[in-house]
Amino acid sequence: MDYGMIGKIEKAKRYAKEKNRIHFNQFTVTMDGENNAHTVTYDGAEWKCDCEFFHSRGRCSHTMALEMILEGMIG
Image 1 (cartoon, rainbow, N blue to C red):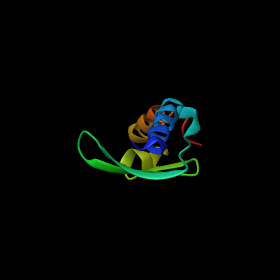
Image 2: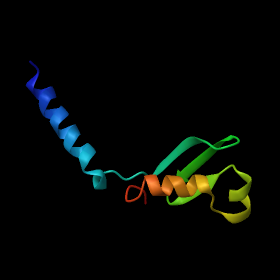
Image 3: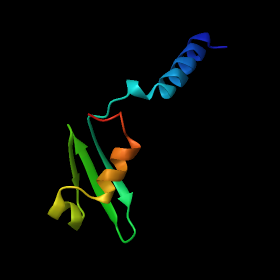
């Protein structure tokens, strides 16, 4: 039995529960919208989305949904 790995698994479980340890700095995701898939990026507190609404308003349902999902984990 690999006792070193068992300790790492337990530590990973603890980290997974303590979401305040995780901070996203940059990422790109594809979000399936009602009509099309959209590419959403986050880079150092700046959101971007390729949908029309975001280009006219600077915020959209895609970026807001990700903000809700990742609350406390970005920034």
